[in-house]
Amino acid sequence: LVSNAAEDIDLALSNHGFVASSDLDFSTDLVGEIFEASSTFFMSHAKTKARSAYLSAEENFGYQAFASERLDPTSPPDLKETFTMRNILEATIEDDRWPSTKFKELMQLFFAECLDRAFLLQRVLAKALDLDENFFVKFHTGQNISLRLLHYPLSSSNQISDSQLGAGAHTDYGLTTFLFQDPVGGLEICDQEGNWHDIEPQEGVVLINSGDLLERWTNGRYKSTPHRVKPITSGRDRFSIAFFVDPDSEVEVNVLESCISAEVPRKYSSVKAGDYIRGRLERSHIGLSSDLKK
Image 1 (cartoon, rainbow, N blue to C red):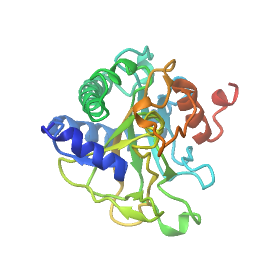
Image 2 (image 1 turned 30 degrees about the vertical axis):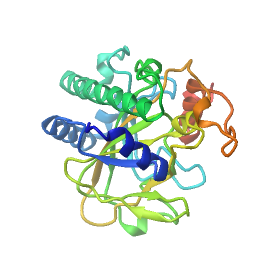
Image 3 (image 1 turned 45 degrees about the vertical axis):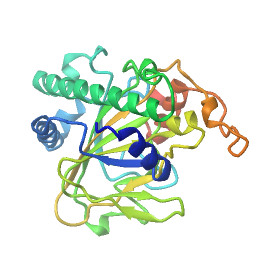
């Protein structure tokens, strides 16, 4: 990252909760391979995809079919299908639940690259907040960090319910997210006045946004900004890749003392990261019995 990265990221996350970056040096070829593998998987037969079925929010691994998630609990199901992979450098997932060994190894390679960049970003955030450079790094061993592939199929307007979206309006749950977009676009973010703005994809640019737990840590200094994806009703299908950087389950997220003042009193109580993240995940799932048992 460039030398003034801490200042730039601090300003962007404080004002918008999002920042566009071309300085993280992701492998363009590797990102391209991930998009290609994602497309191949989502275009495969439903029975093939079902072998990798998502079983629970606790595991947070596997395939979720079209319209089986509702990121905005007040809206109709999202017009998307997903493949989520939590902590895949450490987690033990049976081989037959992966689409293939090649797919698994490719995703692990990309997960490792994203994790490396996430730690770099965490050190930049720590600098911006006048913290020890490893303040955030020590809370993120990978336990709740997830890579997610997303597919938004082209839908005719007469198939879409009122207020139904590709991804309903929501905030992300953890510390930060990396988002890679294909050229189709469709992402919108909400400003502090409640207005929605299109975010056009840019080649070689990764979007970074702050999540709920970073907002809580910083007492609202860094915004966890609502965002959504419009239905894809013309052109071609949309694909995106998200890397969710969430703290380990036992981490107690307490407001940083440096973010409390007479002008800005404490806004948030302490929360355990794992409980918060799992609760948000479970509320988004539709009819997943293994979650309902908890």
